[in-house]
Every structure is written in structure tokens, then in C-alpha cells.
Length: 182
Figure 1: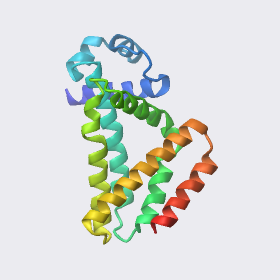
Figure 2 (figure 1 turned 90 degrees about the horizontal axis):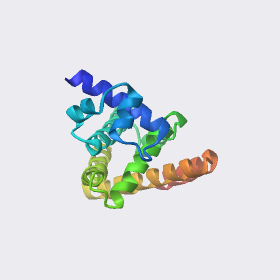
Figure 3 (figure 1 turned 90 degrees about the vertical axis):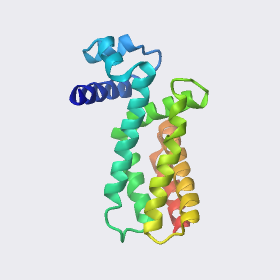
Figure 4 (figure 1 turned 45 degrees about the horizontal axis):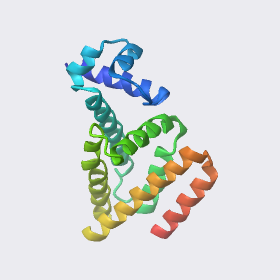
């Protein structure tokens, strides 16, 4: 069951990243990825369950990238921030980031199917980044505040990049943030 679920999840992520969420129904997603809506219900419970699984999967991939980038404990917080920015600002990830912001917006509007992501999407990221900063010598309370600021900055700049397409300006703003962080 795990392999089938993972394959369906990958296919759904690819489809929705390319076509957006819009008015996609479970049936239309299933047809587009070559399965039945019943299989999606079996593996994800509902359309909302599928969407939450997509967000979790993409977020877990980003967090795994952060762990990989932070493998060298000698990497400074500033260098870590630069490396992670290069990763999330990669144009190949823009469809996934657009999907993330689309679902995030739905959650903020109180959509009951998307709202559960608010319970874990920010807290989990803050705790992970804060732990990396503590490893690099920051006191825990300062590490959490710095992590929250960094995540908010990166997500805001990423939204700016996706909205404007002005990579040079957004990169310059991120570099200014990193220099102030250092």
C-alpha cells in the first residue's frame, strides 16, 4: 500500500503543480493521473486529505534539503540561509511553491479542508530551524525568534518572486537580510 500511495501522491503533486488547484475535484485529479477517485479516497480519505498529504510531502522534502545543507555543523547561519534560499528559489520548484501558497491561502481563509496545515506548517519549520541555530551556538529563545523571522522572510520573498518574477531584486533583498542576520 505504501508504494501505491507514494506513486499516487507524486503524480498528484506533479499534476497540481503544473495545472494549479483551481476547481480540481478528486475525480478530475484521478482522471488526470490515470487512476480512479476511489483509489484516491482509499489512500487519502478525501480531496482535502490528498491536499494535506501534498503539502506535507513538499514541506518534508524542503526540510530534508535543509538537513542536508546543514550537515556540516561549521556552516554559519548566514551561509545556511543563502544555501536554503538558492534551493527554494530554484525555478524548477516554483510550481510546487505556487501550490503551497494556494493551499496556505485556503487555510488562512478558514477552509476546513486546508486549515489543519496551519497547526503544523509553521511550528514544525520553526522548531527545525531553531534546532539548527542552537547547534550553531544561539540561545534557544533567540534561535526560535531568529528561525521565525527567517522563515517569514524567505516565504515573503518567495511569494514576491512568484508574483513579480524579479529574481535579481528578490535575491538582493535576501542578501540584505542575510547580511543583517550575520
